[in-house]
Image 1 (tube, one colour):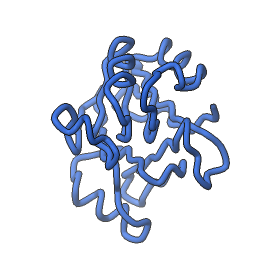
Image 2 (cartoon, one colour):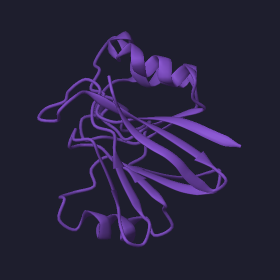
Image 3 (tube, one colour):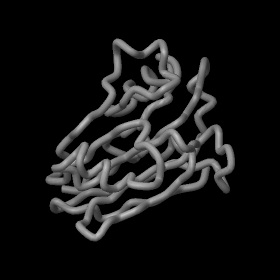
Image 4 (cartoon, rainbow, N blue to C red):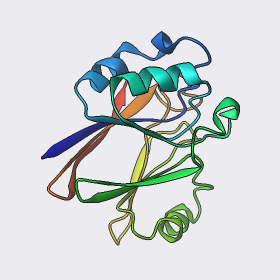
Length: 163
């Protein structure tokens, strides 16, 4: 079985979930779940995502109104792949080692906070993935989000998509 997930972080939507780009809603429609690495900001977007698909979401540093609703980290087994979510993975220097220590059984760590999309895989096979931000790109080249496909206990596809 193939599991398809939309990967989000740093959506920073304060009121209207419709402000999330159409490309993301279309991707969610053809996915199985949503993985969100924090900074949702308010409940309306989280509620709208949960109305569409199952959601794994963690608390971001700006999620003040969601502190009782969201955990700081999540680890989930998805079709034989252990996926961890955290908002702030810390400075670039030492990030991979730090995440390996924090999530020793993880195959994939999804994080946000920097708004900078990137995929990094270490020599031991741990992949760190930041989908960027679909609404606040800061210095990133584009607004972005991620797409993940898992099948047969392996990550089959992990892409950063513009929106």
